[in-house]
Length: 323
Image (tube, rainbow, N blue to C red):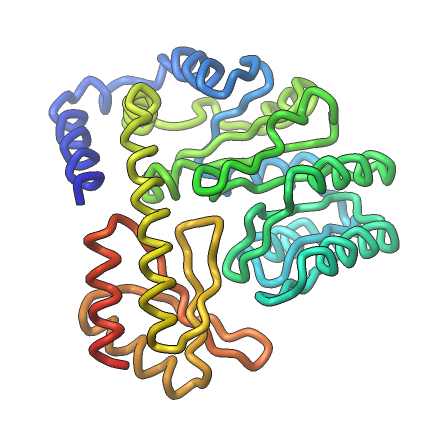
């Protein structure tokens, strides 16, 4: 795709200059300035991390205590329960369902938080692989509830760029709010592990106690700067993903497959039974198309990432062949 060509072009330019490999990352403050301008957030409210996962690890390392209650969606990002085990927290997995009415879901969530009173609330917004998203008005309600319960709220916005629903604008009002983001999804740089945390200056100050001497390496620093100066690359990709989402849904419905996915670059295809899931997954794998099996409460889904239109058309074509 054009996005991949531009990314590869810049990577080649970076690796031609050995200076970035031979020296320490002493230009990190310049990157913080770029982040601050882009996000319109003060420098002391940002921490650059080695992926969103690095931000989540620092958060748990700083605030999780033995036996403290941690609420997270189930299923969701795989590291939430892992961190609970590492830090000996008491997990509160909150079940999400692909076809649940939004109002029922959100009230069920609030009721669980009020009853269980977790110290840490970790919400992926939107969540994957079962996609749910908390709307703007309910993010405010959630922040207020967390504050009332003396809970710390982490909103994981890995897929933010595909939907524009964000809690970042609330960090000035809610000192217990932490927003985690990544360059892995919309920027297409998952292999480089670039992420960042936005929170009140008090929380960032605590998180910085456990940060490594250099947040990221020189290669990642230069690449981050490039993409922040050329945001149109990311924005064009996001537009293509939106078009791909629409096309994928249309074509899969013609095959009478239920499709879930509105707010990210991930689509969940209900393949109805294990035999069908295994067959289509294997066929696509042999065609060098990587998907994921997602089995949840007796239902069999194929998790597909849609990208630029050409890649999505190829995915659709191959699914049609093996239907």
